[in-house]
Amino acid sequence: MSRPTRAVIDLNALRHNFQLAQSLAPSSQTMPMVKANAYGHGAVEVAKALADSAPAFGVACIEEALELRAAGIKQPILLLEGIFEKSELTLAARHNFWLMVENHPQKQAIIDADLPHPLTLWLGLDSGMHRLGFQPVDIAEVYQALQNSRNVSDKIVVASHFACADDLASDRTAQQVAVFEKTLLDAGLDSSLKSLANSAAVLGWPQTRRDWQRPGYMLYGASPFSEPQPNADQLKPVMCFESAIISLRTVPAGDSVGYTASWTAERDSVIATVSVGYGDGYPRHAPNGTPVLINGMPCPLAGRVSMDMITVDVTDLTTPSIGDKVVLWGADLPVNEVADHCGTIGYELLTRMPARVPRIYL
Ligand SMILES: *Cc1c(COP(=O)(O)O)cnc(C)c1O
Image: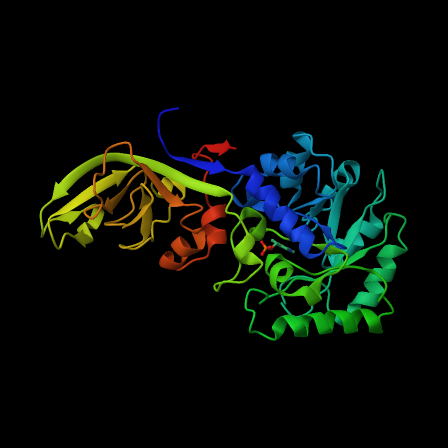
C-alpha cells in the first residue's frame, strides 16, 4: 500500500475504555454501541475485540446487526430504533436480535407476528428528550401487552435516553431520571429491568446507573464533555488518523494557496501539502488555522481542504521533509479539538470517515 493516509486503530485502548466503563458501574452490564461502523472504527473488528467481555452490542438497524452476525459475533445485538418494517421480525427472532420498541405500530407488529422464536424486548420511554419512546401515560399498558404476548420471552428492559448528559451543569438529566422513576413507580413497574446511561452519563452521572449501560463515544477514547472531567480524562484515544507530507514549497509573502485562494502568506512561508482531504473524511469546512500535527508539532492549516489534499503552514518547523508523518487527530490531538475548529463534534468526524481510508488494527 503506497498512499500514507490511514486510520490506525488501537484495540488495546478500546479494551481499556470498555474496562473503564465497566469499572465505573460494576453491578451494571455494559453494552458497547457499535452503530455507524463503530463510530467509524470498523464494527466487526471492534465487536471482535470486545467479544470476550461484552454481553451484547447495540446498533442502529438490522443491516448493521446482520453484518456482525455474518462475521461470527455471537452475542445478542440490540436494534436501538427497533424495526422499520414488519418483515424484519422473523429475521430478528432467528438471529437473536433484541428490539427496542418505541411506538405503537412496532408494538402491534410484534404482538400480531407469527414468529419462529419469541423476542427479547427493550421498551423506550420518553422521559423528556422527545425524540423516541412511549409517553409516560402509555407505559403500563404497553409493557403489560408486550410482556403477556407469546412473542416475548425474557423480562422487558425499560430504557430512556438523555438529551443533555454532556452538560454537567444542566439539571435536565436529574429531571429525566425523576420522570423515568416516577413513571415506573406509578405503573407498578419499579422492579423492571432498566437502562439509562450513554457515555456522558456513565462518566459523569453515577445516579443513572441501572441494569444496563450503553456507552458509545467514550469507548473510542473521546470525551463527551467540553471540559476536563476526572473519569473522561482516563480515556485513551483509539483512532490515529494520519498521513504524510507529499510536497513542500516556499510561497512568497502576498501569494495565495489552494482553491479560492482563501489563504494568503503574510510572510515568506513554507507550505507542506499533505495527502488527506475531504474524500478521506477530513472536514472541508476546517478553517485556516485548524491544527495538524507534523513531527509532533502543531501546525496551522493554510488554505481550503481539497478532496485528496490539504496545505499546512510549516514555516516554523525546523526541517520539514517529504514523507514526514502527519496526524490529523489522535492521542496528541483530540478529535474534539479539531471538531471545535470546524463547528461540529468529534462524533461526526469519526462516523463520517469513509471506507477509502484503510483501517490498520493494532
Ligand atoms: C448512540 C446511543 C448511545 C450511545 O451514546 P454515546 O453518547 O455515544 O455514548 C446510547 N443509547 C442510545 C439509545 C443511542 O442511540
